[in-house]
Image 1: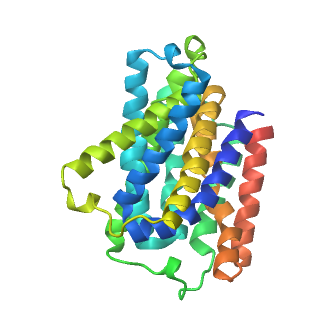
Image 2: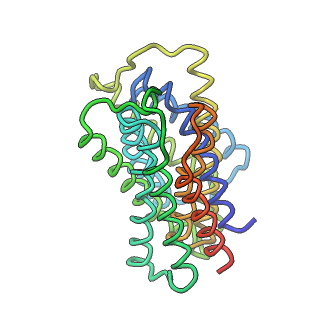
Length: 299
């Protein structure tokens, strides 16, 4: 499977898991939810990487880079995203998080001299425009709890953009490590395990410090535990590992843009949950994303 399809598959998983995140994140709080999520995902990936027995291929300096990427992209980025989602709901939070595509494309061209011209450039434009239109003009019932705005809009927007920037930085800093020929032996599963473990340790230390926001708003129960475990497995254990494989073989800008289609993929899922169909403009924007993806893959 080519790296473009890996990035799209990661986007599809993130679309599904963003809806699974809403209830446990709001019930437990962004910090507590992220802490449990990172803890479970770390355990899953550690078991998988120990089974693969690929740890010896990662040096201390490389492990430190994976850990830093996890701290920025997962600990700060994911926590900010869930805090934003708690305030704006999954649709609006997806719009803000989709900005990571623009951040990553800019950084990829600037830092790595990646090409984004001709048909791929047109595809990128269609894709990003489709993402914006899908989450901006896809009408939803304001009566549904997922569409209600809580707290300051300015704070929520700042949290969403912070999540997007951290996701971009955490991804871009791994590109040289995952794509260089001398590092091709690095196992993406072991790399993902290091990223998740770094994020979990940061959450755990914050909880030990007694920081008020790190406390859980409600004690975890079996239902919440299963939701967190399913979300973590699909989004982080599988989704982020697919992203690392995509980064190994593809440009940062293209991978980031393809993975940013998750807000479009959320539309039919929200239709099922809210019982309100997206408008024609929302479906048209989804068509733009499909066209953009095709131009990026086959252009």
